[in-house]
Image (cartoon, rainbow, N blue to C red; front, side, top):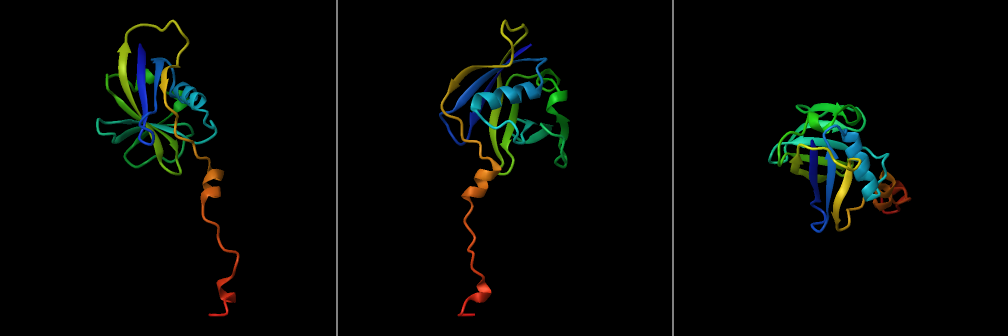
Length: 158
């Protein structure tokens, strides 16, 4: 089975990527291809969520096994193939790439064919626009307001 996924961002309406993957590819393969394509730091936490038609989270597929959300079944990216969870055209997923700010890409299966790709999968089929930046934890800290070095108890007005 060959899948064609459309990946979009709510942050940049001009951005999209089309990713072609085989049914036997793992979610880790999908993650690695996307991280490399976007120039993101692959050491950052990430998760896929299989969702319902309204983007409600149903199943989490994590990079690192962590505490799962209540009511959400959880699997590890390196242990699960796409064909184990992707079976219907227009099926949706979220790809949470920034855990600290809860930023995600919206992914939808737009085509599926019962054949084998002549290329090694997964790969990016089409691209448009710039991806939103991936904020690392140290960048978040750099953007936080500086705390004053003064002690409020030393204020002569107190």
